[in-house]
Image (cartoon, rainbow, N blue to C red):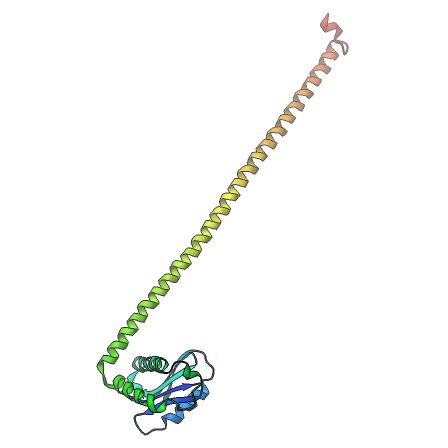
Length: 220
């Protein structure tokens, strides 16, 4: 299991590369860069016979390697991340304007050293596994924070709904009191009208019995 080829490029401009064996990996790597246009961050792998080309692009800087397919993905991408950090730390903003192979003489040695380390040193996999576990913890923390934030949004929504419900309850009670008051006045007016009508009926009956509106026979 080994990493056999490494490259650093800006777009399709190769800035540094190193091959541990005589292959056409460089030509295939350039084809991959051409077939993966743009500056969007990406992590992608391409298989070629029993080898796999792994590409990591971050902030327009592409780091690529070819490794045995039996090596999996974890170690090659750990290698790419390591190389990316070393390259940016060493050259900084010069990466943005450098000509093709401008860093090759110096950085090809770094590629060679790191390829050997990630291909043969057992601690490389332990370090990467630890990074993976840390990433998992970080992802869990982010997920938990998202849940807390989501719950906070829901709490705010519940508070808003509670406030609206309280306001609606207050308006309902006020309307209910007004309704009861209106009903009471209507009942009172109806009662007065009924009493007045009853008095009129009684007066008419008495006037008929007492032979006149002045009730002469009843008052004498």
